[in-house]
Image 1 (cartoon, rainbow, N blue to C red):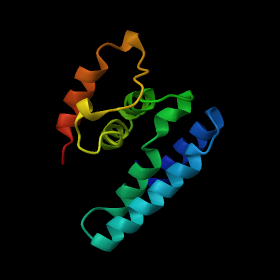
Image 2: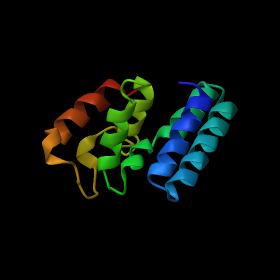
Image 3: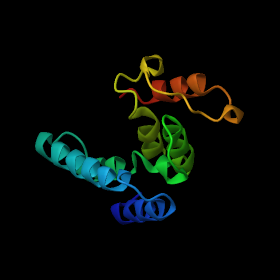
Image 4: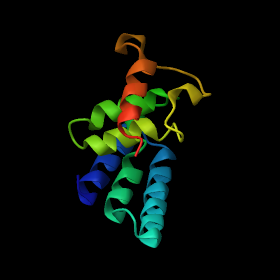
Length: 125
């Protein structure tokens, strides 16, 4: 996914569910871009895009941890790495067992912990 497409995705999401999370996403994107530019270790363009989209699951409305699953599922076909970022950003140590918040996952979606753990294991790097 390119920057302009990511921005359009966030704009559409903002129309679906306006709120401070939109500005937060731009702030994260800019911070990720600046940090990667300074350390010169990662692609700063991708860092911006992934920062911008990390909370895209909030397009579906207010939630606690559900937004990481929603973002992951929404972006799976558009950009798999961005989808993994959506899921893994709430788990800094990439360990689902460390989550301390409210688990508001839709029960119809199966076992969140087992699915999330599997995906997070794939993206530890």
